[in-house]
Image 1 (cartoon, rainbow, N blue to C red):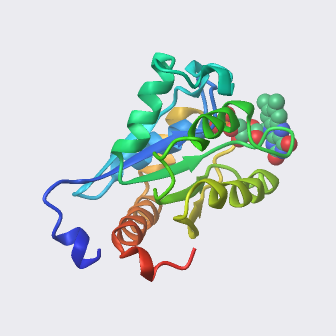
Image 2 (cartoon, rainbow, N blue to C red):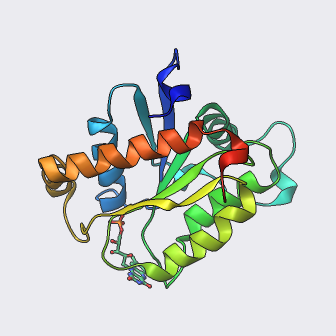
Length: 193
Ligand SMILES: Cc1cc2nc3c(=O)[nH]c(=O)nc-3n(C[C@H](O)[C@H](O)[C@H](O)COP(=O)(O)O)c2cc1C
């Protein structure tokens, strides 16, 4: 961890957004496992409620915002960094994730927020390529090199949890989170993204 992070008096907080609204989602299960094995000093909160956000329209960006949107934007504003883990649908982002991104475009919650990707499948590279195109458009601090992929497609949530408790996988997650926290704490002018 960086000196800045070591000096933190409060834990580093990560909002982990699942792009899947499926109850048995491997991406959501992966993020829950990441939360459960996070090293001391890093707190992960899983956001798996993309399905509660109304379809974005600039017409709805009035005060007051729809309550679920206000809560989502507040969670984004409050965290130190964001991790996204998403399935690929029809060779691109699932509509719910794109909708959530659209809700963030006009605000200032994500503009300087570090964002990194995780992935729960051996497939889905078109979706990953699209996110790598879209995310630098909405944040100046997308971290493309901080990435881990786990081959969990079609696993049940219990199976995902079992795999992710294995020492090798747990170590990968902890190294990933530590690298992300260090990148987030790095002074902005040291970043090349
Ligand atoms: C509507 C739909 C479209 C999909 N399209 C693709 C696709 O284009 N490419 C692909 O590799 N997988 C595709 N899949 C498979 C999902 O990406 C895959 O099952 C993923 O692991 C599901 O993630 P989840 O378990 O978090 O819901 C599709 C699945 C659904 C339901």
